[in-house]
Image 1 (cartoon, one colour):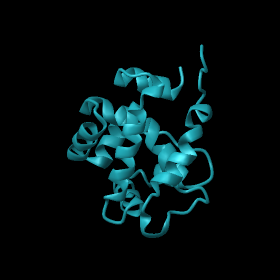
Image 2 (spheres, rainbow, N blue to C red):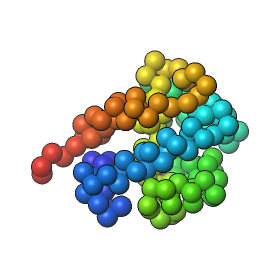
Image 3 (cartoon, helix red, strand yellow):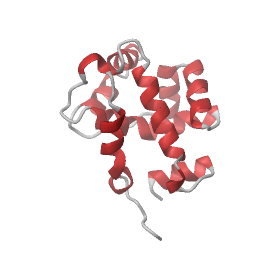
Length: 143
């Protein structure tokens, strides 16, 4: 099962139903609203001892995974609740979904391995790069 299928089933929607796009959009907004944008989020990861994980997402190598519990620790309960509300999912689901999506969002936002100026993520660039997310993650096709 592809990531998009997994997300769609968790959200009770088909992969084409847009549920994952709502979470991606909420994640982009969350990152951009951080003090310092992506730089601020990177700092939060570093403060929690996860700087190497987020650095792998920015860099050009393989993205290191993050456990949902570790992501919850970085984001904090209020942010998790807010993201869940914006994406239309339950708070207990959001970190599991984001732990799969956020590495790809950050990676797509930093194609040259560098954080954008002012740390702001360009939604058009990220969503364009993620347009191939289903192929990148193993879309099942019509199976």
